[in-house]
Figure 1: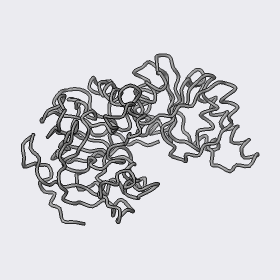
Figure 2 (figure 1 turned 180 degrees about the vertical axis):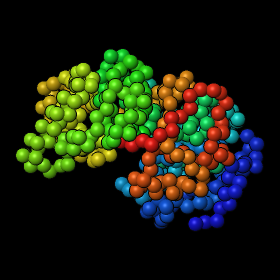
Figure 3 (figure 1 turned 45 degrees about the vertical axis):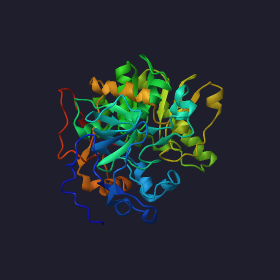
Figure 4 (figure 1 turned 90 degrees about the horizontal axis):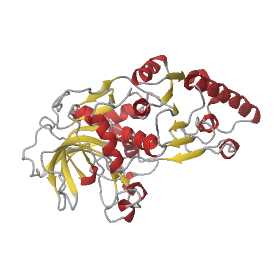
Length: 417
């Protein structure tokens, strides 16, 4: 471990508008990819200057996501393939902080502004950014994963369009905890599926990072939802968040697709999916209009079967495997739709963030750690020993700072699919 003094990590020696020469940062380098506890090391790094339409933000708190477990491991591909111009990787795709310096062309933000950062980047010059969707741009990247200069450092470099006003009713760590998962869930339901009052929604992994926001969005929209969870305790959490009921997936283990089933095993699995579909209908009153998917291989055949004719299965990940096989007759003969979704654009992030500012949607946070805990936090996640969202204090000296208005803060809970 390199000797970087962390005693003053919450202090910055220059005023807003001026950058110090160096900063403390947790850095991954290609020659030490492997377990997060070894791959992440503290280094003193030069503070980057902002280019055109770029902003340097002093990070007050950062959020931990699984993408930088992958960055540490160098799997499924090395992040250095995404940004070969950099010899180092500073991860972190969620942050709250203070604008410290703005580059040429930035007019909307000024030093001293308190912000939250969304993690979608694209080139200003791509035509898709100016009329289709930045997510369609060939230059689209996830900041802090497919780019360097993420949030696990005293300062970070972002595009000005990534900045959102920090909700005043949240602490720094609460504000750093929700962006990646919440904005993903918002695009999936609100924009890709046109969520509206009266819709019925099935949410897999309902007590997980995506699911806790999917439930709250359904409740806010006046839609009914049922959450799939792995324990009674998690079921109680999804009910607290506004679900109309929950199903313990352990009672339907036989419906999970493993791959390579014999015809007999497939028949038995399908019988379990039918039983599950009946349980979903009992809670919702009918088959779901929308299935919120991110589990992939194990659940996808059931999702396609369960969703009603002309219904939508929206998917943003494949945590149990991304090679999906399912009985496609239930798709075409009942005219169902499969919709792929990836993060969110700046407009969606701003609209979603307003709901947090208004107190309609609340972050769900498990644990806050100090800046010295970045490698440990990713190792916990790698070994599945985390029990929910982890926030990291950077510029904030202790938890609870940064809240300037009354209002509902985060829900503190142990969560998981």
